[in-house]
Image (spheres, rainbow, N blue to C red):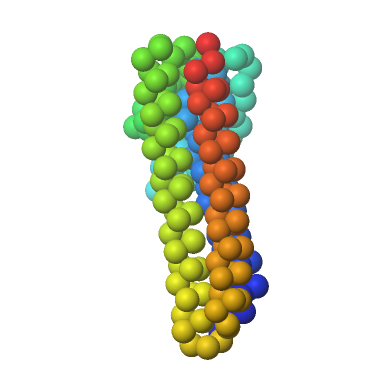
Length: 187
């Protein structure tokens, strides 16, 4: 059976993975500014294999509202274009035979508010994940106490430490939410 410290370390690791996952999810939320993160993980059908766009091309940001995708294999241009159109980025590709340009339109006030709602929903999913991790660890501590592996005092101390880890992760997620909302609402 695992020790209290191992359970807490595992919990901390899982919480950090949730925070990292949230960070990646928030990076693809459109803000009205060009960002490679908007498209770099789009999957492209490349000779029958689903491949992330950043493995097929270089993605650059020459201007504040323009993304340029230059595939290493010109044959992939049409598939990349199809993937961008199918994605929910809302961007329209312009293919000149060598590169694809994506102009990131400025967000309207209404679309900015919608994006803030999307950010809130993404962060709430991350909060739920953190609470589920906390619940799993809490159940482990309770079963350890019930199985006489740890004393009641040790269980309470472990639960306090668990709550501190959870609060820290939730706080980090909330800060990421505030930063992203500010970025989205910035004109």
